[in-house]
Amino acid sequence: MEKKVLAYSSMAAILLVLSFLSCDNNKRSMFKADNGVEFDTISREKQHFLDNNPENPSCNLTLNFVYPKNITGFNTQAVQNVFVTTVLGLNYDSLSVDDAVDSYIKNYIENYKNDAEIYIVNRPSQAHIENLDELYFSDEDNAHLPEVFYSYYENLSDSIVYNQYGIISYRVRQVNNKGGRLSYETVKNYVLDLSTAELLGEADIFSAGYDVALRSIIQDALFEANNVRSIRELEDLGFFGIDEILPNKNFLLTDKGIIYTFNKGEYSAYQLPVPEIFIPYNVIRPLLRENSIALKLSRL
Image 1 (cartoon, rainbow, N blue to C red):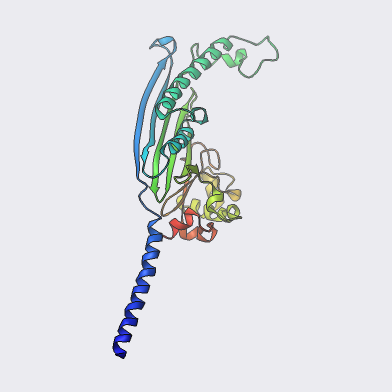
Image 2 (image 1 turned 120 degrees about the vertical axis):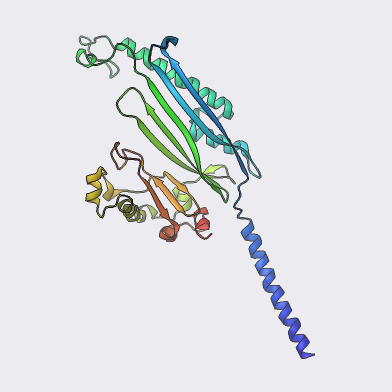
């Protein structure tokens, strides 16, 4: 009889443990890996010649827009609005994806035509006119300017870097040239919380005082990425201000860590590639805010 009681007691204890494990697994399952997002892409190439003459300068736009077409269990329209405003701009927040793309292309062409008109009007010599604004040129300035306007080009695209556990981390890249010798490249990173359809900021993932604490971590990552050992060596490569570098809110989250992008001109010369810093979670875990998505990802 005593053996039966012990057997029943042991079985009850096992069932109790299994019950707790089941509850814990249910809690874990709420943090689902699959976001259930179906993406689509709109690709457009547009060229417009001044006065519709193929012999004239032109503006050239290449656009590749990746966006969530449908999301199971989340507000698809709200998420699409965030993508539209971050990729195309705030001026298009009230438009559908297709209409926003069409409007962006139209405005790009109109802006180019307006710039060309300003150039044509102001190119003649203004040497004897006082109080001109910076749109006007002196005779000396005019000497190297062509009779016709410059050609423009722009390449605008976004890409999905991470899409799991209730967030989408994505990157927007824009390269443009307005007739000068240099093209300007800008990379903007975003982390979107699907449950709220809002973008996450550094304050949402880090505890207070994180910015200064991250300085040495970012510096070390730059040393390693550029195979150097000191700030002086980085400066010799074309970096500047590294001794006072701080996180710039331009980040991505993945299941491995956080990625910071510092655009050209922030802490490095335009001739250098866009600096990108990867910091694994084990390095920054003490800085992560309690119950934040970053802390949850760090424990996967």
